[in-house]
Length: 85
Image (tube, rainbow, N blue to C red):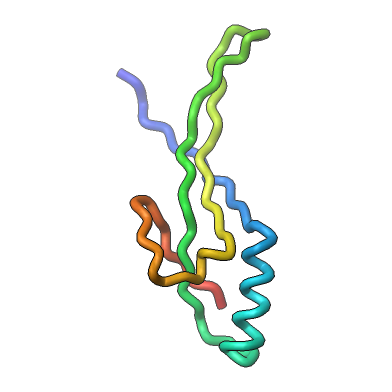
């Protein structure tokens, strides 16, 4: 029986996310320290075959935020809500 193993997720913040965050903090929040709800997308990990070593190599899943992370109307099958202060 295979033992369950857990690995950490890598995270990615796309440049469009930082641009939208700056715009939101200046125009909407007026530099307030209020928390902002965002949505991150989850990328599933996978395994690929290393032809030289003839072995399977695991690629971890990842969480990513981008410009659409501030859009509250987005409905995603797999999403994680986080707060940004």
